[in-house]
Length: 590
Image (cartoon, rainbow, N blue to C red; front, side, top):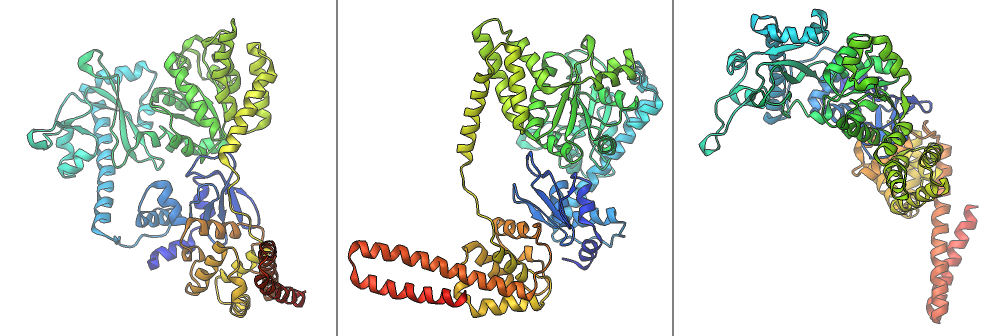
C-alpha cells in the first residue's frame, strides 16, 4: 500500500464512509451492523468494526477495509477507491500512479466517457433552446414542465442530424471511445469492421440518467413522432463501461438524502412520473425507467431504506411489474405498500390533473402489499369454484412464504383464507410443508462457535503489536505445541498464520481463505473486544491443554472398547497404559 493510501486509510472513518451506503446501527462498543449491500438478506449480518477499521458479512463472507468496500460497492479499481475516499475526507490528491498500463487505460476511458456524456448533455440542452427544439419545448410545456424544472433535470433535445453530435464530440475522444459511449450507432461492414458513426438519438427529448454521484452516465430519449419510422417511444442507452441498466435507479442522486430523512422511498415506473412528483415536492421518489426491477436495484435501495411505496401504472404490464417488485422487495425484508391511483392514471397525469395534495393523500392511504395481492388474486381467479380458489391460493402462497416474519406470514395466510373462503388450517398446512422442505434443504451444516479459550488465544496472536499478552501466548504455544496441534484444524491453521505474520500487520491480511477470515472477523466483532491479559492467556492455555487431553482420553476409551470386543489382549494393555497416562496428566492439571 502506498504512503498516500496509508494516509487516507488512517484518516478515513470506515463507519462514516460505509454509512453513506448502508444504514448502520450500533451493535456494541465498537461494532455497527446493517443489511449487507453485496447479497440479499433479511436480517443484518453485515458488521463494521470502528477500531480495527474493517467490515465483514457473516452471510456472504465479504470482508476487508474501507478501500475494499468502495472497490466492491462502486465497482472501481483500488487506486480509484483511494481517490474516492480521499475526496470524501477532503484529502488533496497526489499525482496519479497506476499499477499497470491496462489500469491506466481503463481509468482514462471511464474519465473520457464521463466527459463525453457531460458534453452531450450540454449539447442536448443547447439544442432544446434552439429554433429546432420548439416542438420539444411545446411537448415539455404540455407535460407541465417550466424552465426551472427542465434545467433541474437537465432535459434536452436530440436534433434530427445524423452527424452534428459526432462533430461536436470527435475532438474529445478517439473513434473507439466514441463507439463505447453508447451515444452513437454504427453498422458492421464487410470483414466485421465497424462502419461510420451516426447519432443514436434523433428528434427525441433526452432525459439524462445519472449515477449516485450525480454524473451523467446514460440517457433515455422519448420520440416526438409516432409510427414505424419513429422507432420505439422510449429509447435507452445501451450498456456501456459506465452504465448497466439493472444497477441504476433514476433520480437516486437527488433522492438518496430525502429517502434517508423520510425513511421510505416512492417507486414509480417512468421518468416523467418521477420528475413531476419531485418538482411538486415529493423528493424521496425514484423510477425504474420503465425497465424490469432487479435484485441489484433492491440492494442499491436497501442502503438508504427498507420501506417502499410502489406506484406503478394500473394497466396489466404495470400490475405484473408491481407483483414482481413486491416479490423482490419482500425477499429482502422490505416493508412494501402499494398505491393504485383512481381513474387508471399514472403519477404524472394524476399530479397534473388533481394536484400534489391529492397525490400525497393517495400515498398516505397506500395499502399493505398483502391486501393488494389478495385483491389481485381474486381479480385473476374469482373464487367461485374450488378450482378457482386453488388457483388463487397457489398465486398467493409464494408471496406468503417470502415474508420473513412468522407473525406476518400467519396474518397474511388468515386474511387470504378468509377472503377466498378457504379453511385457514389448510393454508397453514401448506406453509408448514414448505417451511419443512426449506429447513431440509438448508441442512444442519455449519461450523461450531469458538470456545472462550480459542477466542483468547486468537486475540492474543492477533494483537496489533508484540505485547506481554502476545509473549505469554507464544510461550504457551512453544511449551505445549502438541496440545495446540489437537485444536480444531481451522483455528490451528489461523494461529500458525498469525504467528508468522510481520509484526504490526493487519491480521485479516495474514489469513488465506474466506472461512479463516470469517472466523477472525467473528472474533473481532464479538463482545470480547479488548486484548486479553497475560493471566487470561495462561488460563486459556491451561483450558486448551485440558480440552486436548480430554479429547485424547475419549479417543483412547473408544479404541479400548474396540480392542476389548475384538479380544486383542496386547492392544488392550497398550491402550490401557496410554489412557492411565492421560488420566494422570489430567489430574495434574486440576
